[in-house]
Structure formats: C-alpha cells, structure tokens
Length: 441
Image (tube, rainbow, N blue to C red; front, top):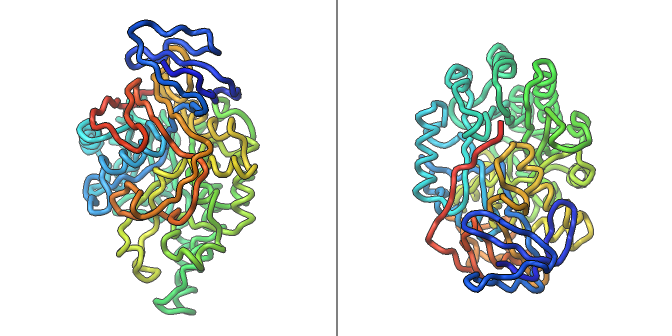
C-alpha cells in the first residue's frame, strides 16, 4: 500500500493511495482504501507518484561495445532515474540483423537487466526477409537508419525501403539524416578547416537540410503505403511541419523528442564540446524552443533519451574521431521536472509524454498508466530535494554525464518495477523481477 501520495496520472493530480498485489495495481483511490493487516504500508506524504517512465530509444552497447556500457550498468542507471522499461537499438556488435541475434539480446537482458525491456530488430539493405519474420506482439519495432550509422545498417536502397514500408506490419522507427547531404557538408568543412573542424560546426554538417530531406522521405513513404512510422529524435523546427497535432493513439505517423534537444542548444558547444555531440546534432535555441512547443501542443508525441554512452577518452578526441552520443537515462526524468519547475511544461504533460503516450504509441500491454489491472511500475519523487550531478554520483559505466554541475530540484526516491521495490533512497536492490515487454497488436 502506497499511502498519501500526490498521484499524477491521466491529466489529473490528486492525493491518494495505491494498493499493489503481487505485480499489479489492484486499487487506486483518494483516501478511501484501507490497508489490510498484512499489507506493507509506505507513507508517501509529500511525494509525487508517477507511472514509471518508458524510454523508447536507448543504446546499452551490449554485445560488442561493453567497454562503454552494458545492459546491467545502464539499466541500473535507468532505474535510479525512474525509468522502468526501455527499448534498445540494434547497432551493437554484431548488428541485430537476424532473429537469432535479436533473441540473444533478450536472453542477455533476462540475465542482467534491472528494468523491463524490449529490443528493436535492425534493418539493412539485404535482410528484409529476416525483418519480416519479426513478431509484433513480442518486439517493439523495426529500426531503420536512413543516415550514417554503425556497420551495415544504413538503408539507402530505394527498392528495399519501398518494400519495407509496404510489407512491414509493425512500427518502423527511423533515424532520419540524409547521407548525401552530410557528405557534401563534411567535404566543404574539411576543405575549410582540414581535420581540425570545431565541434560548433556539427549542426552545420549534420544540418537542418539533411534532417528534413530524410524525414520528409520517410513520411512520404509511410503515407504512400499507410505504414506505421515513428520518427526518432526530431532536432529541427522545419521538420515539425511534417507531423500533425493530436492524440498519439489516432496517428499512423508519430515522432519523438529527446532530452538533449529539449535542454541544450548550439550555444552550449563552447562549454561542453564533444560531450554534447549527438546525431542528429543539437541545433539552434529556436529549434530547441520549437521542439518544446511541439511537445506541449501534441505535435511531437513522446520524449526519450537516445542514451548512447561513450568513454571520456573517446569524447576527448578531435571532431572526426569523437563519437556522437551521450548518457542520459539517469537524469532524463529530473531534467524534464526541471523544465516543469521553470514553467516550460506542465507536470501532467511530462507524465503523458514519458509514460502514457509511449505506451499508446507502441501499444504496450498494461504499462504506462496508474490503473487497476496494470503492472505496478511506479516512481515516487520528492519535488523539493535539490541535488547536484557529479562524476561521483553517476551510475553510467562511462562515468560522466553532460549534466555534471547541474543542480536539479527534484529527486527520485523510490521506484517499483512490477510491484517490486527496486530502488529506494539511492540504493538499487539486486533482486530483479523484470519482464520482456509485450504489445497489443
């Protein structure tokens, strides 16, 4: 029994109680639930109870890149940040391009994850038949890199793309950046700067035009074939015109904003350098602000992290040698709560975009809401407990965060995963009661 929590759920905020039996929520009410004599009671007076965050885009680096991260370390960091479920991307080594390799990752997660999990099947120019074997009820989606990526995962064969969008019966998630445009921009900058390109040029190389050209192509293909398209990490104001306002459950074409595109801008390259080098790039303050507006107005449907850790030594290389990506799962929820504190977004909208809408977007079974009969994935947050991010308190295997030095006003206190208290006042419990996500498709 969770008593006296300030519950934020389905566009309402109220003080109430939540009764959990085993893995499930069995009752939610405003003070009328009586605890049984055998019930464990947690007094949540003064704490806010949110549904567990569902992160639809992470790179946990296992297998093949475990010097940067692994499923155990990054899911533990996610848990500490209030994320109770993740969906992981296929650009590991080897790339997840067969059903056998996909199931290998599920087995790894069963052995080591601290939160619930799903994995995307990867598409390439030559594995379409394997992609079409994917089970939509047990796999979150198909990932298509329509831009630079790892290994054999750039899908630029127009015939393959046409067939994929025509024949795939499940959600297609796309990374949209036009490779031809990026190569031309790179050549122009290399001619000017040689190998010593300033990282501040990153949004000019991986430009608005590169993003829009690829995103508009993906949207056109989806409309042509009535495919279920989800465009990841929108980074430009221009792309927003490709999407429509409205509830996510009514859309065939949806989109995502990421924490870094809602927090940082091109003005931050001077201080942060390669530590905020992402693909797509962090762009202008006006792009950042337009993305936030689109989140508030339901043009963008979900908020995710694109958590993609690299080591400090990798990030401290020169522009071309420094990889793109950064760790975010531990600080995603508190970063969005900071935007709430600063009046940029409502608390109800944060919960919607990080939990409710993700569940609706992917049609996840019984998660993302505080409802009777749903899995008890819950987060208790103290909204007035300031703390500063330091290298010493990050849980990422890479040992750093782009938020180092930032003081957040909100702090995650307790996290329940499938009714099990998995995180409490800074401590991660090693008894993992986690599950593979399933989908109502």
